Image 1 (cartoon, rainbow, N blue to C red):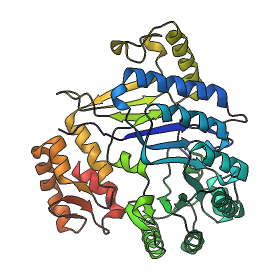
Image 2: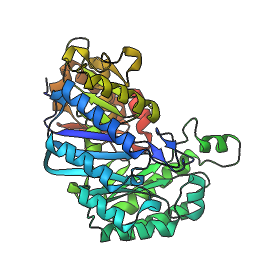
Image 3: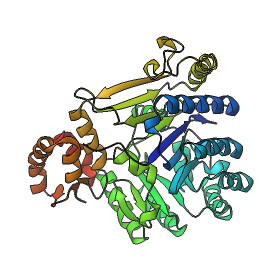
Image 4: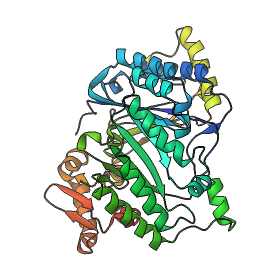
Length: 414
């Protein structure tokens, strides 16, 4: 049985935006003013709580990721305080990665220099598309020129590790428009690209627009053609695909936080709507634990304020108290679930097969046992014969031919 990860990974969710994009289904709220001070207090309280109750989760950090929402709405001092807090305990490992997601509309030199001085060393820029009509359909706040200017500003601020987000197959997009996006993106020489086929998620404005017939979605055949085009052009531009939707110029530029998630490593999630994963306390009925925090950021801050008051009174720090006992079960700000060995195995497959290197069979056997792996390989055999999966002595992986059908392949295997 594998021991918990020796490297630490922390995700911090900052769920505030000035406006909500039409395709977005993430935990976020539109606000005129970001409650920065109040949210910082809540985050530090949660961090203190988790560190006291679950010290075995805290290893020197290999990655720290600020996602959103729109993290670039927060001041440099906000990030400086969090990074300084974490640098004391648990500290940072060698070659650590600190990523911040940014909207091009917020990129100003003083702000980016402040982020760099605070310790952020990687920025994920939400370019999405350089097509003006596409940006309007997606509900983005920036225009194409501001995205190009943002990249220049980030370089001037000293960032040598930039990732660009690209969304394609948005409603009514033409292949020629995607070709222009790819040419422009490659010419800007990012170290990393995340290129996602747009997904019409329930509850989003875009889903409603398509359902009402005001926007036309693309066929699966066109989406597949676009996926193949993206792969060919990015690879030709020196960006190597290492995951279904992610490309890196060199191995050192692969997203360390995302790799930890795809490999189902332990990680801590902080903030409203954040989730975490831990395999530390295993027994027959519990192979791993997942937790998710309250999605409402204002309720999250309220609950953490109650926890801080209880903590000041000396309550809630015994291991048996767990997260909610200090202020009552109904006041909890995090829900935890346990999963058994079979579910954890399925999760490891769902995430690991996204990687181009696939899942390591020896690692799966070591962690979950030979029986589950043997059953997997038996189920995988028909897909190998169809050319959708490939297996060697070390790994099972989805082939280039099977990439577009990855969801169907996973459904078949599981």
